[in-house]
Length: 239
Figure 1 (cartoon, rainbow, N blue to C red):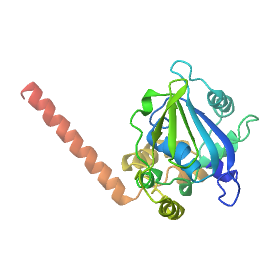
Figure 2: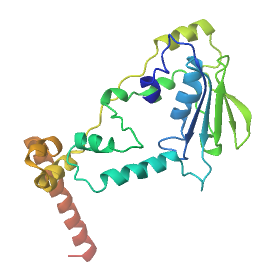
Figure 3: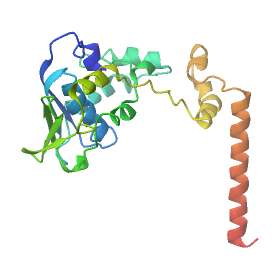
């Protein structure tokens, strides 16, 4: 999102130089095939950058500037009453050190599904700390444990007419992801347990009534769980 909003993913412009991105070792958010395919393969093959390096901090030394900035944000919001998402954005942007940017539903795309059509998985993501890619001939990824020393071809299929692949990449776009929304039980809890703590003008924004159907389903689910738990207790005690 930041690269796009900064104009660095404009196909009408000349490619950027060397992009370096540093992450911690969290496999769910950062150290996985999807992130590496986007940064090391896609950005280079689409000619947005001539070279991309992704560096993961070594275990035990993962504190980085982002952690410092999150702590800076805490000084601003931890003593505030925040009742709506809009309140949160306003308070976060009072920090002198951080600019908070709202991520909207249209910012979330299904890159994982799209990449399955054009790139193979790299099988040893968790093994290395440095990943690099440059050039578009074979969409290679250089990897290493401190000194990059091995090349892996990520192109899928590996043998494909260059013109056909270029046309395919030009037309290929990720689909928008459907927001999952809150679980029904959380909707009910917000309404029944927290709504009363909010100002009247904010109650419907943060803790709206979830609807009769949702209320009935959650009530029935709880009833069934209580009955099941009671039966198990009877079986254990032999009653």
